[in-house]
Image (spheres, one colour):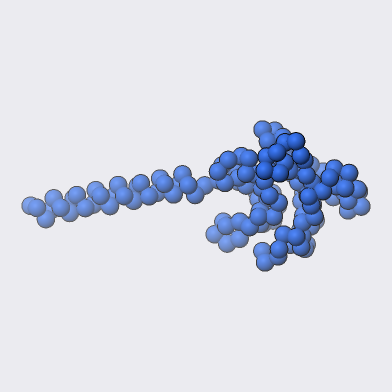
Length: 143
């Protein structure tokens, strides 16, 4: 009888331990925002919306940063991704970035494919010469 009771207690402990681990993983492993943009690129925020950045997706849903936080507006086409960013959520400053998709890969350094931070005038000048896309997605709460 003790053996059967001990077996039941052990099963209950294992089940509750697994459940606790699963809940902890689900709470800590997700993103508060995870949106596919184009190809391997995603707009993600891990813990808070203010961490919004653009990353390059690797295997197993891992992601390597390309444009740092706080990205609040993006646009893209088959050649470029453009982004507006408040550095570290400093809304007094707005930076602009251009990511050239053809120059990027999972092994590339971000500076090989990303131009920026740029001022608004520098960005508009480059935009005209490149024929880049327009901003099509803005996250109002971060603007």
